[in-house]
Image (cartoon, rainbow, N blue to C red; front, side):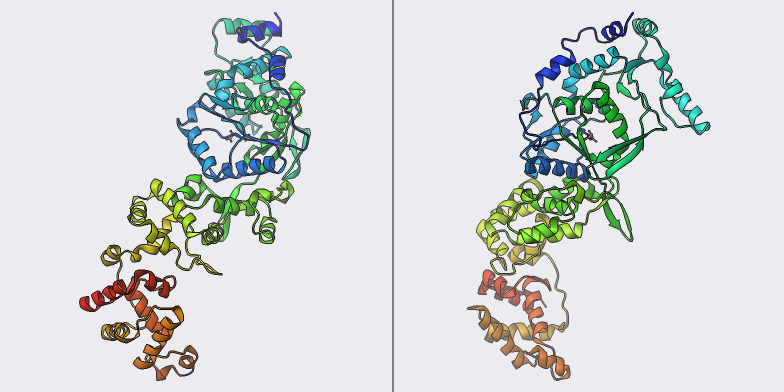
Length: 551
Ligand code: GLU
């Protein structure tokens, strides 16, 4: 019996061979300068910020080079699969306007190189595995789990490298006749790759981020097809897919770095050119005085759903990641404030090879800046869309009176230095609640600062309402408050106050704080003149009169 007989017994009903698939998926009609990248998540129902980081790099590379960015669903690990995970991944990419040019949604395949779901590519993988068996680079392995456990224990005890290699690769020795006989008897098996590597020899390759990397050659006979569902392992599936889909650049997390020798050995076994690899660093966070990996278990910000649920504008998250994707991004962005991140040319050598520090503080600043530049209409639209999904209370508030909501958002918006107090939409309600009379009445509490004597506060409010309230224009408004300070014995001029504080009961800032707290129950708000203007005289007076009555 020959290896071809063995291959035919293992795969008796294959319709096509690898030549067929190589012809079916010809080279793409692109130049060498147009790169093909892919985002290849496993559908585990959770998008880690590290996955998104890779997807963003993929997207920018394809965009920079006028190439192709496609989405591939790597669902060969059926045990870990979550049912609506693919939908979630698509939704997340959509939220960030990151659109793959090729993808598959259910039965709908967009692109010429599909299917893009690995579990639908079984036949294709089988053809490639069959070929490896025929050329002697793959073989069935009948070792049971117990046998493998025992081998590992023995290796550990003897302080040897663990794994299925060299003399430990028992089923390498099983000849074709015996293999066929055991298969015919129904003995379960997996298919392993037959490595030709020598561990003691160095393997050198060029990672576009990390530069030249030296690792030991691979000598492990890794499993390439599992026994239960006959699906390939990630290592093998990615080789076949990236080859047939003509991926030029594989962007993935650095946890895959140690697998590169086996991956390249797989490509070489077929005589195919491997793609270029870009291993992106782990995303780190500052934790006290230590830097550590952002962890799925400990850090909510590890999940991409965190940013969407809080209501960060997508661009803010993207921009904040861009600052760690390339060290010169911020400089470029400052020099080109009107350009989009997609206009930036990504350079893998400008990516930190050793861990990218992600900073939520920085994200907040970027986001505040982006939101501050939105028109009231835009912010209304985006925050309303967010509220429809995540906050019934904000949604209801907006729906009461859309124009009024926009007017509130517009306070200190249309000016040279607009307000920058909103980093994400879920903060909005907390910043505007007092602009609604019922919420003002039923929530919050008065907590005074320097002036806290109730009679003095009432005196200020009464005097203000009787003689000094004027919102006809901002200068007049403030002059009136100062005039009132002079009348009541507060310094209207801060310089004079600082010189001789003992001459005054307090100063104009203290008096303004009283007016502000009685108006909003907050000691910090955007411009009080604009607030009063929007509320109007009657509502301002009602609030002051209610305070006087109630205290
Ligand atoms: N499915 C793999 C993962 O989710 C993808 C790795 C790769 O991009 O090649 O980790």
